[in-house]
Every structure is written in structure tokens, then in C-alpha cells.
Image 1 (cartoon, chains in turn yellow, brown):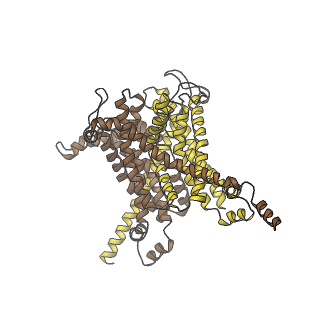
Image 2 (cartoon, rainbow over the protein chains, first blue to last red):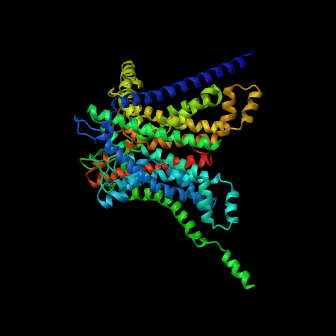
Image 3 (tube, each protein chain N blue to C red):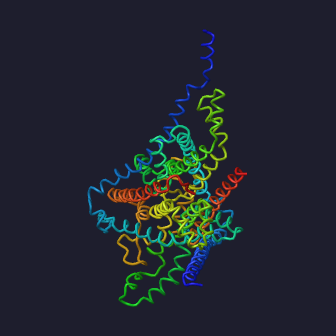
Amino acid sequence: MDIKRISRTLANTVFIGFCFLVTFIALAALAAILWSLIGQGFKGIDLNVFTKDTPAPGSTGGLRNAILGSLMLCGFAMLGAAVVGVLAGTWLSEYGKESPYARVVRFMNDVLLSAPSILVGLFVYELMVRPLHGFSGFAGAVALALIAAPVVTRATEDVLNLQPTALREAGIALGAPRWVTIRKVIWRSAGGGLLTGLMLAFARISGETAPLLFTALNNQFFNWNMTKPMSNLPVVIFNYALTPYDDWRRLAWVGALLITVAVLAVNTLVRAISSEGDK
Amino acid sequence: MTDAVSDLSRAIPKGTSLDTPFRLLCGAAATLLLVALGGVLVSLAIGGWPAFHKFGFAFFTTSHWNPVTDVYGAAGPIVGTIVSAILALAMSLPVAFGVAVFLTEFCPPILRKPIGVAVELLAGVPSIVYGMWGLFVFAPFFAEKVQIPLMSAAPPGSIWETLTSGIPNGSGVLSASIILAIMILPYMAAMFRVLFHNTPPPLRESAYALGATPLEVVMSVTLPHVRRSAVGAVMLGLGRALGETMAVTFIIGNAHGFPKSLFDSGSTIASTIANEFAEATSDMHTSALVALGFVLFLITFSVLAIARALLGSAKEV
């Protein structure tokens, strides 16, 4: 046993200990967060949450208007993001490929993918809210769509690149025009992958708060009108958590639990679908 | 002969005329994404121009932010953004690295998948949840168990006293950095794990066969192999910490000056915008906030551009 060997073993043991320790700390911290979220969230959940609107402090109420608002904002946003994202991803994979312009688009899309969401909110404020003199559900949906579209684009390009070239050649050989081949052969064979991309984008935007603060704003009332300010879960959570009222804080925890459960459920579903595809 | 020609012309498939419009439509969608990114930059520049024009360079160098007198100096939030993001990264990086090494080298196979999946799922939890947890659970704990003992233990007149001065209410720059670190941790750990996982097994196995310890394998084989992408992943984490709004706004304390200590209240660009934008009354106030957004855009754009260039085609999780 020479000194060198002992010091190597020692360094290695310390390193292994470090890896175990930090993994334990990390999992403990994340478990603590989920634990308080589940504890506080379930404590406050009841039927009123789904049947009543956001209350004045001291009176009973729920999150009905915020849940509806969130669903509508995300729904409209996904409509826009799906069209733009799938078409843009198709262009990158089928037409642009490695051309200089496609490289630029791909690079900028990747930057947009992780750009701070609050800046997208500011952009939509300058684009829609200020010129039209008012906050609206549509402005919120546009902001969310701008955050979702890069996710869809990236996922679409990745999944289309996985489709075998033989499929494209088969379509052309049958005499189908290129765009029909893309639509009826490539998109169809990539269907599951396209769907997962859309679901990931949905999970990404359903918890976004910052871009909604000054686009959709908030609304105390039950509202289907997308041209008016619109209530939504993230902004309600933000506003209610920062108040001293216990019943508002309780609703904030419930809202946070609802969003987290939705996001985790969608992500788990995505995993299930894609591992199904692997088999 | 004429028959053959007409056969050929009939052979041109139906709908071919729509080929070009479809290609243009797809190209337009791709261009729209470019326009969106350009639009963010241009709109922030235009909206922030009145503030840049009025305060000039002082906007970046003074920390006097006063909506009542309509005087805005943004040094406080700018410094706060950079300091909190770098502190968060410094705390998160070793832990994320350790978790990724644990998962690829030491984890019992039966736990590998569940822990890996858990880490990836947690990367998707909305940031507002981290912010709320920071405000309601972490801050009281931190004030009682960390801030007060540290403050009373700090010898008077030392650097420690300066660093730990402030009100021990649980919020402040360090608290915000810790919450940010917890938030970017699953994200970075998941990216590192993918990078380590993609290192060709023969490389690692041959190092082990030469008698290298796991520490030596990680340090002299795995890390050098993924060096470039790993730096990219770190920059991506930094970009996330710089632009994060919700996890920070709840807990940083929202004071506009320079933070004087680790426990002092501060602000970041994103938290200032989130707090004040909807309530800004004067045009100059709005413009100053948009100008702050422009600064944040430039900072994050550079960081993200470097990250993407380094990551190359490595796939993000």
C-alpha cells in the first residue's frame, strides 16, 4: 500500500460520499416542495373550488373563473402554436434542411425556446395591449402561443427527421405531389410524435405566470369573452399568495396544486406515449 | 405521338399546383418565429427609448429608482439579476453534477429509472410553485434556523457581520438565490445526465479496465468528453436563472437599491417588471421598465446564444 494508492482511494471515497450526499439533499429539497404543495393544496380543496368564482376576502369562493380562463387561454394559445409550430417544424425538416436560412431559424428558435417569458409578455403588451388600449384574453393567448410555438417547432422537426426517407420516396413514386406526401404520409406516420410535442408545449405554458401579468391581467368574474381581461390560475395564485388573508392563501395553494397536477399528468402521459412507441 | 404527350400531361398529379403555396406557407411559419424574436427586440428598444434617451448612461450606473419623482436608475435590479443568478448557479452546479454522476455511476439499477424520471418531471413544475414554497415554507425556516444564528454568531466588525446584516425575515438576495438554485437543479441535473449517458461506454470501460477509480473516470474521461456541451448546459441554466420571474419575485424583498449584504432585500430585472408594470402610472415609469426588459433581453440573448453554440446539436431535455 503506497501513499499514492491510499490517497486515490481516499479521494474516490470522498467523491462517492459527495455524490450520495448531494443526491440525497436534492431529492429531499424537491420532496419537501411537493410535500407542502400536496399537504396545503389538499387541505383546501373542496367542491366550491370548482363551482364558485374567486371571492372577496372573508367570503367563501372558488377558482371556477380562473380554471375556465386558464383553459381558454391555453386552448387558444395551443391552436395558434400548433399551426405555426407544425408548419415551421415541417419547413425546417422537409424544405429548409441545412440551408443557411434554416440554420438561422433553427438557432433563433432555440434561443426563443428559453428566452425569459416575461419579455414575451412585454412584447405582446407593446404589440396588442397598448395600441388597443386594454388588456384582453386574446393578448394573453398570443403571449402564451409565442412561448409554445418554439417548443412545437423543435419537437416537430425532431420527429419528422426520424421518419425514414423511404416513406417520402414511396409517396413521390406513387405520383403524389410533395405536399400531399408530407400531409398524408409523413405527418400521419409521425402523428404520435407530433402529439407529444403539442402536449409538452401545453404543459410548458399552463404554469406560465409572468407573460399573463400584463396581457390577460385578471378578472374577478366568470367570463367567456376573450376580448376582455381574463382570469387565470397563475395570476390568481400570484395575487392571492401575496395577501395576508388566509382564505385567499388557501386558494393560492389549491391553484398551485391544480396546475402542478395537470403539468405532471401531461408529462407522465407523454412519457407513456413515447415509451409505447419505442416498443 | 400526340397521345403520348397528352398522357404525360395527364400524368402530372392533381394538386401539384399547391406544392409551392404549401412550401411558402411552411416557410412563412418559420419566418414568423424569426419575426417574433426580432419583434421582441425592436418593441423593447422602442418602448424603452424614452428612458434611455432621458437618463442616458446614468440609467445603468445609478441606483436611484423613484416613481414619485420619475427618476430611474437601474443599476440595482441589473446587479441583483446578475448576482442572484450567479449565486444560484454556484450552488446548483455542484449538486446537479453530483446527482448526474450518482445516476450514471453509483445508483443501484433498480433506483436509476425512478430517480431519473422524478428529476425530469420536477424540471417541469411551474416556477410559481417554487416561489410560493419559498415564501411560505422556506422563508420562515431560513429566518429562524439560518439567518438569526448566523447574525448573532458573526463577530462584530468582521466581513461576516457586513455580509449577514439586514432584517432576518427570511427574504433577501441569498434566499432568492437558494430558491433559484433549487428551481434550476432538476433542469441542469437532467441535462448533465443525458450528456453523461451519451458518452460512449467503451471509453469509460477502458478507463475502468486500466484501474481508474470512478472519480478518475469522471474527471479524466467523461467530463473532457462532454466538456463543450456541459458548458452549454450550464449557460442554459444560467439563462434560466437570469430570466426567471416568479420564483424570485416572491422572496427577494423587492428593494431597488444595491443589496448591501446577502440577507438584504434586493430586486432583479424580472421581479421589478412583474411588480410594477401593471401599476405604472407615468409614461416614463413604463418606459423605464421596458428599458429594463431590453437590458434583460441583451443579457439573456448573449448567454443563450453562447449556450446554443456550445451545445450544437446536443438535444435539450
